[in-house]
Length: 211
Image 1 (spheres, rainbow, N blue to C red):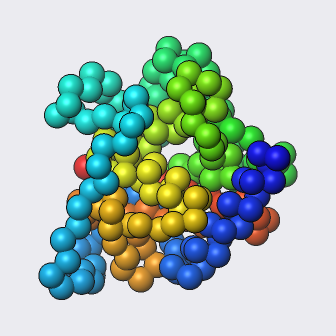
Image 2 (image 1 turned 30 degrees about the vertical axis):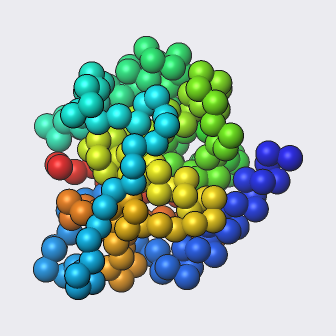
């Protein structure tokens, strides 16, 4: 039943992305001169959700997951995995996109493509319950997003993805807006979703950057 629901929600996400023209992938800084912002539009963030790991530094978070641009991508993933192992008892395995698609979808997997880091959104869990296996996986994805994109954007991107999978795309509520095929966070960094070569897998790709 859960697999059926995920499949339907993935198909719904694909339809939403087609309508919204999500066609490029990055989590890097873009030229703000090319960003078309609607006039007299104020972007506000979503209120703090009732989730134990969605916190910010102002509210006293002690988790300092920060991408170190002076280290290699592989070294950074190693740092991330040490923290995930300590906190959740599991780590993210690494796979190339082609190998991943041949093997089939699996959670706790980070997809690498050159400098890009991806998560397969079809593994997104629903009916979140703290300390459950599904809950630990979702918390690990949240930590991964904040690690690569910064705490505020990572948290917002995690919430937006869940919103899209549930059938509603409220980008401005989470501090995002569109510029062509990009979804741009209010700090100027972008994120996007992309179909895999098998045309059924939907990746959310991140490219680490300074923030």
